[in-house]
Length: 310
Image (tube, rainbow, N blue to C red):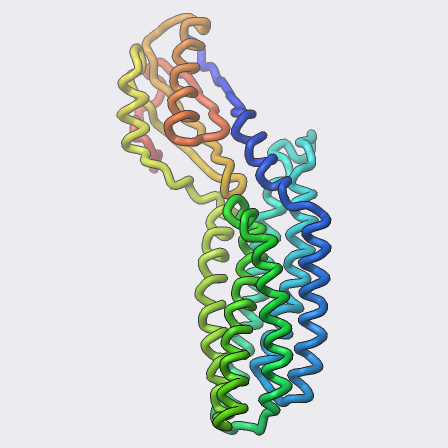
């Protein structure tokens, strides 16, 4: 039997993903961006006038939020562009690139603020607690609204999740800044300001590192998180299939899994093999959530029958 490749694109899965990411409307982005721009200006001015590093750190985070959300929106638009002869896989990786850039920038900013806070801990400065409380309260309210607007989309899309984490971290930090302002106002504990900044930075470092690891894994085309032994057992139970080997899988984005494999089969006509392909594809798509399947039929061609080729 001649070697024969068969490719199946699971359009329903990809269409579902496109529908999910399309929920991020331009109007929603406009309001979130406007809110964050307002917070940024208020906290920059408030931080300078009050002498609060925590407010300035919040301002920097909010500035990065504004850029992050704008990037997410444009990446979302690019990702929905159709495939073309130059980009046969389409443009979905634009969102992964955006998530990686957003998270890397926030990681760097958080590390910088961490060291600035450490300096301030060694040499505390006087702070206007009343102004700090007022500005932090404004930031908290605006951040809470922004988080509410993006919460639903963050569950469906890694790109939006990176922006959502920016907003969530600022909401958490605004609570900390507000609490610190109250403590400074009532008891004059000025060292709380850099301490809050350190805690905020550590939290953001942890959250962004998770996103960075995921995006790097996708960009490096690491294998999808599948149970390959279970796939091997299920496929080899199909009638006239001897072996599945030389499996490769990768992810276009966090939703779209590509899968290819060699299928060692009994000698038969191509029309008969097509029926077996359909069974294998149905299994991989329905049971394992794979979006795009490419299979290559063989009859005792490869000597190495391992599922993953060394």
